[in-house]
Length: 372
Image 1 (cartoon, rainbow, N blue to C red):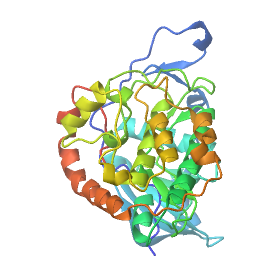
Image 2: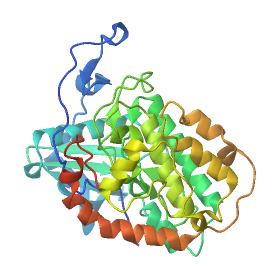
Image 3: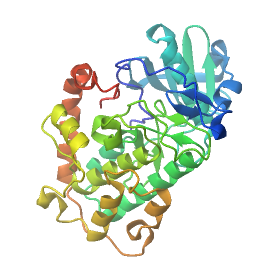
């Protein structure tokens, strides 16, 4: 069985993030440091995570030969703790491949992961660093990516999707309450803990996460356009300031794909997708045959989380209180697994082309930089 952990960034950033510091702030935000218009939680700077010396890593862990994943900056391998023999995943990042900004982003990601403690969020358990390399030790999950797990089963039902979306919403609400906005919610960043469609899920990859002062997550203050275009909210495409509601749109896209095998906003090209996301105010359940097995309650849920206007879009309490997630109805109708398989094949085939065209597509719209 191949074990997987959160994916590395598969492509480098298409451009540098905005780094200008705001010189003005409202009276209530005077104590906060501003970066990209974000009220950043200054604990990231005041209490940076202190790494262990990298030379100690080989004493503490025995690395396995199998590579679980590769990325622009390094790779992921499994390793055993030399004292307990417990197996972990280790992300190995080589600084020679990274800019100073990339290294700073890694430190931020480590800090965020180590401040979160939730059963459905990947755990960062140890951290080693020197001038050449960074070792990040994380829990190892065996189920692989969500799509792959659902593809491998004989069938799955709406009840399976409800479990996934409810669990994801609870994990994201936990993050939001602590000022963490993930900014790259997608099926590839949701792993199954075990090789079973009924398994719990784990949210991974906080590389694009923003941390704002707890209590300010609802303020529209984020500006950097990042994430994955197919899952990105309308406000990101429009270049507007945004908040945690952008993650909720992405959650809705995940639910939409799992239920129907299609995206809510469909386009034949990336340019068409951008145009639709910037100009449309709603979406439709198309094609009709993709939605034949989906309940009306699920459709009602999707209309609220995939609301183009972020002010009208559901928040996490609304999501968890919606009858589709909170009710006791039985949703045992089998969904169309073949459509999900076709979607996943198209996603894989389109990845290379998307990377090649990233600069052209988003060059004038800041940087949507994770193009899976």
